[in-house]
Image: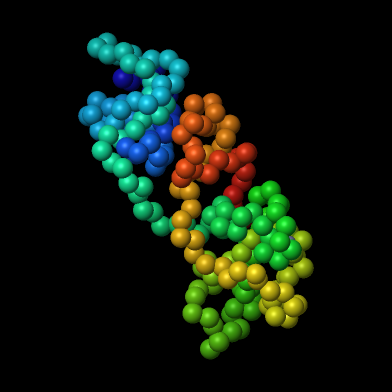
Length: 199
Ligand SMILES: [Zn+2]
């Protein structure tokens, strides 16, 4: 399975556990190997077939592990998507919901103030779940380098590390194209559009 197949072999395959819950995304190459090794079964085929002199088989688009029925534990990364998701895409200050592109991450104690806290530093670090929250652009700009107490603002809930978040972020359009949508009910965050997440 080389040559003309190589593009196909690097296409994405949704991997379900034995309980049919999505746990990761792998390549067609890996999926086919897992099927051959009888570690996985094909659940849904994409278009076309993989061909070699000795075999011809449908290109898998979803596979399921035969015996693995857990959801692998992964540390929840402190990044914009996960913070927005934890906060329900809602500005912590004006309590309005916005699309991701209109939301920013606010450091509750800003860097300029943190450095001057000296002995009064809280028992968490500057870049931690406890010191970040979702803010709309307007509120973030208004807050500037103030502490909340200085402008009379309050957080309704203390920001914490989330206990659980969906592990896979997939664009809805892509899930539809690849025939994954029926299996994206759990452990998947479907994004309406792919947007830049850095910043
Ligand atoms: Zn706001």
